Each structure stands twice: as C-alpha cells, then as structure tokens.
Length: 310
Image (cartoon, rainbow, N blue to C red):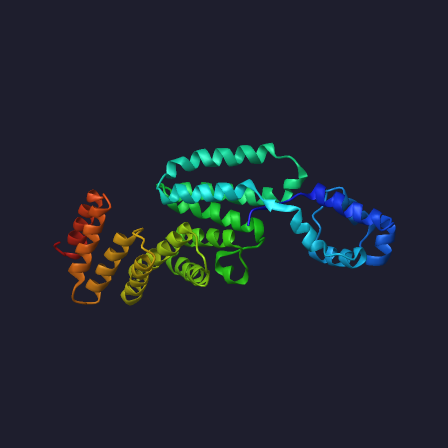
C-alpha cells in the first residue's frame, strides 16, 4: 500500500542489463516480442512496465525482473500521512485533518517527477478520502458519499455501489469502501450490505493495527444501529454483543458506551430482562470516560423515545 516505483532508476537498471548482454533494443524485440518502442519508453522511465512484459523480459535477460522491480520500490510518504490520519481520528482531532489535507496537496503539487506516477493516483484517492472524512464528521455527512465514490472510481473504473462484490480491494480501498457504506445512511439496505462485506474482510485479517481495530468496532456499532433502524432487533443485539466482546477481548473502551446503549435498546425491544442494567452501564461508561453530557443525553433519549427511566 502506498508504494512508489522509481521508474527512471529501474529503467536505467534494465538498460544496463541489456547492454551487459550485448543486446540492442531490436534484439530484445526479436527474442521477446516486446517492441523496441515499448522497451525504449520503459528504459527512459516514461512507462510503467506491465507484469507480463517483465515476465517476457526476465526470460531474455535470464533474471527475475519482478524481484528487481521490488528493489526499486519504496514506501511513499503517503503511508506516513495515512498513519497520521489514524492518530487524528483516534484522538478525535478531526479539525486537524484540514492541515493534513493541505500538506498532502502541497506535496502532490510539488512532485512533478515521473517516478511518482503511481503515487499520484493514490494521492488523489487519499485527498478525496480526507475530504470525505471531514464531511462525514460535519453537518454535511451525506455529501461525503461523493468523495468516497470518486476515490474508488480511480482504481476501479466503472465502480458502482450496487456491484461492490465484483471488485477486489487493497487494504486502503477496503477502508474507502467501508467509509462509503457508512455514508449511505439514506440507503440503509445497501449500506448495511457493504458494511457486512467489510466486516467479513476485517474479521479474516490478522495483525490489525489499533485504528483497524477501531474501524472494526465502528462496524459492529453501525451494523447494530442500521439493524435497529430496520426494526431487526435480533441482529441489532447480535452486532452490539459482538462489538462489546471485541472491546473486552482487546482491552478497548472505544465506542463501548455506544455499543452498550445499542445492546440495552435492543434488549428492551425484544423484551429481554436486564435491559435497564445494560443502559445504566452505558451511562456509567460515558461518565467514566469524561462524557457526563452524553450520559445525560442517553437518559433523555431513553425516556422521550422509549419511556425508560434511568
């Protein structure tokens, strides 16, 4: 994820191998079916070599050029920005995303080197994600959909939210898909379907980062809430319980109060004894986490919406 291929350096590397073998570009064309013009553009750093091209050239040059390409690839600065974004969201510093967005845009505008050709498309996706996240955490949440959708279209031309299962995703693209699902609050069934797909992908992953764990918890919470809105209280309870279990197993308090609240409301709707105890735990958790106003809001909603006195 977020890798830069140094095309000029790799092109020089290929030219040196060819010359060491005493081959002209026409010789390579005759032995590999790679046209001399294609080879010229690759050697001059003007073109990204395709996988099948490298396979054919490897046979002619008698070495693994795919492995050589990896040696001319490094993690780009975008990965550092990606990690910084994680920390901003974890700490709730959403306002700081503006500064991060400006920094990424500045770097993108300054990097005119063709070596960064691949990185530029990822950088565009990343800036769209930043823009979408800012909107998602603001009063214009629904407008975040367009940013996440546009970002996915860059790497998946023809992408449609209704056909998301027809595509394969990198870890970064999966995160974009998750955000897209969250933004579909007005298309509940479609959004829930996407979130379930993302949940399965995350649950099958090993060595999750801290923020990926937070994303997984957020998935459990949003699935519980979506099922609540769909009046499917059994599934609302199921995903609230799974989220609480995951928090406990990983010693995390992130979204725990919200998950407890969702669990309590689902228990109330299903007529399960003990729902008040669960809801009171949600209140206490908010107070422990330093959010007494949110605890009072929970009490107000419980009474005004469900006539539950806490």
